[in-house]
Image (cartoon, rainbow, N blue to C red; front, side, top):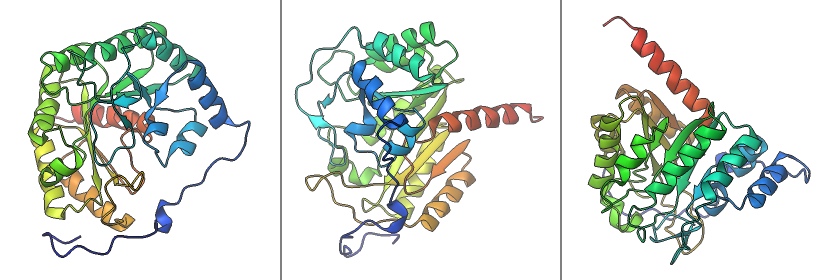
Amino acid sequence: MPETPSTPLPRPARKPPWLRVRIETNPDGPVRETRELLRRERLHTVCEEAACPNLGECWARRHATVMILGDVCTRACGFCNVKTGLPARRDPDEPRRLARAVAELGLGHVVITSVDRDDLPDGGAGQFVRCIQELRALSPKTTIEVLTPDFRRKPGALEAVAAARPDVYNHNLETVPRHYRRVRPGASYRHSLALLRRAKELVPATFTKSGIMLGLGETRAEVRAVMDDLRAAAVDFLTVGQYLQPTRQHLPVERYVPPAEFEEVRREADERGFLLVAASPLTRSSYHADADFERLRARRAAQLARPH
């Protein structure tokens, strides 16, 4: 990857071999069972709405990332496949249905995300809180990871979610500051970074997590600068994956980053002191989140056990 912007390269026409994934074809397998359960409980997932390439693998393991507060977003980010428009009213029964589905799936770890809800006074924070409360009541052993919007101009929203004490607080920066206007219109890099810093300050025991995408025209120097900013905000866990264009109406892929380069990025992140780094073309925020959470716990325990 060049260190400074240069003449744009021709846009890649086809996905490289390392981005091809196997799709389960068994009509009676766990993918179908997971889908039927989610339909029955009227739950949306980011797996489907964002056209995640890992859906087949995760659902075969009966793991799904639930997207609360509907499937219509109030923002129109250049990378995201979720519909934009006027969302429906908040569903008061959704937290209970979510908890019921998690219990039926037998999940040891669950990831809850949402669309942006700039239309709500609290940005949807109260729904996250109620989901955490319902999950604690019905599945007390399940660990909970939230992937929240930025709650921009929503005073007290972050504090409410942090006070509910999720095990992991995730908010994705998505890209480097130079591309924010193009990739995340309506968002602010500095605000998102401050949100992560504040989440750690409020509940130091909660793991904080963030992710970025490669392939949008960023430079390696910019990626390293984002890593430095995240470590300065005491973020524990970094995910780095390949951006994939959902439709022709979305931002194009500027470059498919090879696996070897992702490994270089991972090493650079490790050197900066993250507790855990996941970096590969298919890495996504909630990909293998259950196993990653166990690794986070083990590494923190080892860290605390070291003599000071």
